[in-house]
Image (spheres, rainbow, N blue to C red):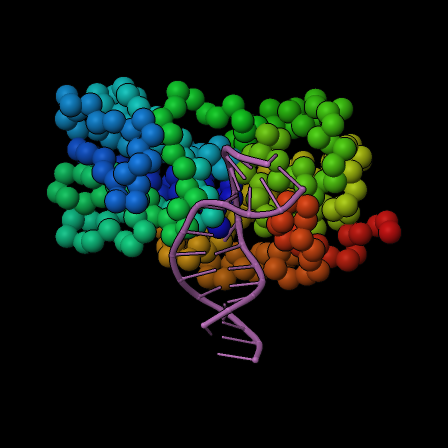
Length: 264
DNA sequence: CGTCCACGTCTAC
DNA sequence: TAGACCTGGACGG
């Protein structure tokens, strides 16, 4: 379930379990041998530390030595990617593809059943994604309202909300909840919707924050590392998986309540 | 058994 | 704008 909230929780989790840990190596599973993509191990590397940050659906790990970041790795977690710290003496979970190993033979593992997760050594955040609605709300809003004349916004709002160039971090459950809470007709063109219903943009910040506080959705296999009210997220979800639905033009299921549809 | 479905990108006609 | 990329859970016969 990784959308904005879950990616942010993963960053918190990584920071929590990597705190004070001294890493010594990076290794890859058999299946990921061909996907090292620029991740190399400097031979002079002794020990390093790891810190994480997220922006929308992008997750960035920084490898640090002597207070200096010497490598940044950007991750897109796909549909099922998540992280698990495995203490010394325990086997990495099935479907682990990438491991950061620390002193004592424990590891931080990237676990991903469907193998849609991707990673890449980078200098900075991806240029293909817009500003994060939670971390950089002002820029996020500006990037949308300043580009409303573009042809992209001729499309229906339910499609544009999934465009990561403008709505970084919004995925299939968040678009359903945003449109529902905004009482927005999902089939209205995005330009009209965004200029007449300011709740949409505001909810792009508020709802991911709420989902984050509730611990996000429960990925199969993925243990939320933090205290969260049991069932809180499921109760919070009011539209996704609960209402009328169609398959959108991109093959994704769009969930909405009939009451949102204002035109025929 | 089989078919359908999944919280996401990518690239190739 | 289809598919491709993947595994596995839910559910039907």
